[in-house]
Image (tube, rainbow, N blue to C red; front, side, top):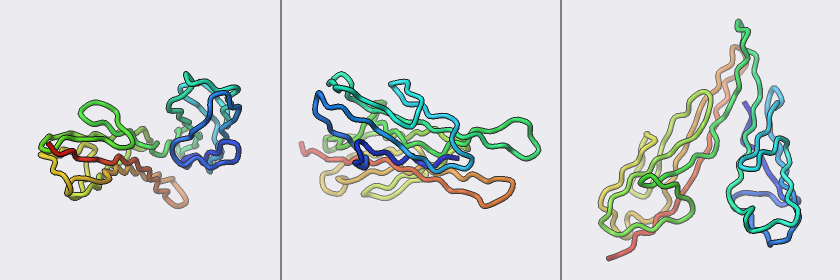
Length: 185
C-alpha cells in the first residue's frame, strides 16, 4: 500500500501545522511511495483529487485540518477482485469523546479516557506510551491525574502489516501525540 505522503507547501516541508498569512497564494504538493502506483488521491474537506491542493488568496474560513487519502489497487493472486491497500492514517485522538490535538489541560484528581482511531487495511494494532507506562489497546483510561508524574506526551501508535503472496511483508506505522498539562487545584 502507499506510504504516508510527504507534503510540501511552496517547497517547505510540512511536518505538522502549516501557518499562512491571509491573502497568501500557495499550493500543497505531496509525493507517495507506492507499488503499484496510486490510482486515487482524495483531499478532504476540499474534495480535490490530485497530488496538489492549491489556495489562491487564502482566507481564514479556509483554515482547518486537510487530509490526503491515497489508494493503490493491488492484484491478489488467485482472486479476480483487486484490493485497496491502505496503510494506517495518522490516528485521531479523542479525550472523553472530544477530538484533541496539541496540548490538553486536565485538572488534578480528574480521570480521562483517551481513544485512538485510524483507518487502514488490513486492520491496525494500537499501542499507547505515556509518562506512567504503556498499553496495547486503542483505549487508554487514566485515573486520578497528578501534577508532575502525569504531565507529558501521550502517544498513540498504530501499525499494520501487509503480507503479499510473494515478496516481503511491509510494516506500516503511524503516530499521533498529545501533551497533557495537569493543573493543580
